[in-house]
Image (spheres, helix red, strand yellow):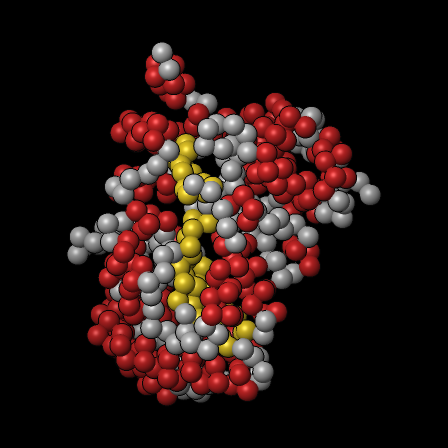
Length: 443
């Protein structure tokens, strides 16, 4: 069977994470754990299912935006469900304004999502605390929100969230009201929702309740009036409250927090003594600059399985010229991506927007050039100096400037047997600025 173009286009969409529990997406999944340093999802799963199945756990997960975290978390969801856990996975960016997030926003978002998920399997819980709270909120905000006293918790939270998300002024007023009540809200979520919900799940034969809060790593790194950066405020200053939810929780957190001076406080307050689990890039080269053969093989497979999901890896490689003009064009695509999975698919998608397969080398180079120009337009001279230091030292220090390099996708993190190391985004290596620096420093 030849290349199914409509299916291939859909499979290369960089904005859609793979839902590994679904048969169609399962066939596209590539396990990169052998080149990423360890069994990352395995450790999250073992902590919940084997080490502490009956006691709540709170685990932190991080990595570059677009490196495959959502796909791995959806795989975790699927594997935990196979072990009879009820798993609530949700993208927090759907509920929250990432530029302006507070602790009560996250807690109410979790409550609403858990409530909605339980209602879908006919577990209906009516927490009296929230019925009273919603009535008080409507009175306090003095804005029309239609809330039926008999309405499900998820509907009430959804209506309030929708109303305040579209109005920063309303959101500020709501926070003024909720902030002094944070401890009461947390206690009510635990005693009136999570604990009775978990008990009913166990009566139905489930092993427990797991909440996976994805996309919290996208909260804006903005400075608050308190002179604290928003991620540090949420996950470090208020981390002990996020940890108190009485069920298994996995939070995604911004990668930059790993380089914060307060990383030990983060580990103890929110991680309960465990450091965040980091998902690194798929290596396209080793520390010494030589090609990482296994990483490149897996990236080629990631592209080709989307073209021919029903063929074996060996057969897929024989069909490369159905998708690219030569195998070297596929290699070029994999190398320039730096092992950043969404960037790899983004470049591929960019080519498909211009022509049908087989993709020509010229087409790929046009897309790479456009992507590189877009990336370099935001780098200032100071950041270039920091980039040159990363190239020389293969490490990132804990300064705020380096957080910018990571968040801007200018620098990628890799992992091998000797630990983590950092490299410049391969697309930037081809800029005139970098090549001039390289010639000067190699003399």
